Image (tube, rainbow, N blue to C red):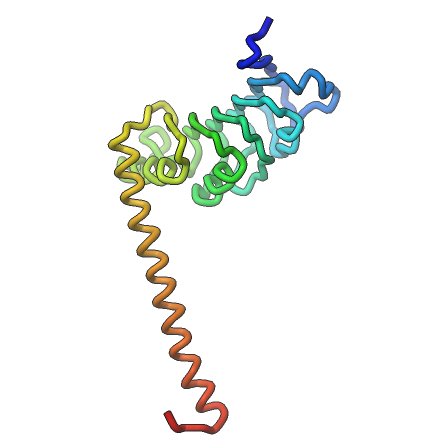
Length: 195
């Protein structure tokens, strides 16, 4: 019998599925803790709503892309997304953070947005990828095949907080300069040239 904290395990790997099977009863899905749907062609993840106890989801080799919609899975802590087609890291990580608030273990190896030596990425790109992901997912303990050290988390948060502050500061300056430009233009448009 399965440990209640682990739930049941279902493997639907290598079945060439394009969607999650609808013939699995809700009573059976209520207890699923681990779901392996790797090596399929699934791109619609509405089925996550039907898995209230899901903590581990294996989606290796599917049709996951940067703008793939995920549905909230508040108990999910482990997500494998190796060998998919995630190209925009920022968009994708925002989606994960929003839908999987307890995420602790994430593997995205062999995605275009996860550069490494194995897919042509440089060491600097690999470091930037790791720092960005670590800085955005507060509970993350392991990224890909490497445990996150406290020093690595500190550095990631330092780097990306700095980039965030710089970006916000630039937007404020740009917005402020736009406002300054608009005011004189309005005055001259109305025929009033006094300043």
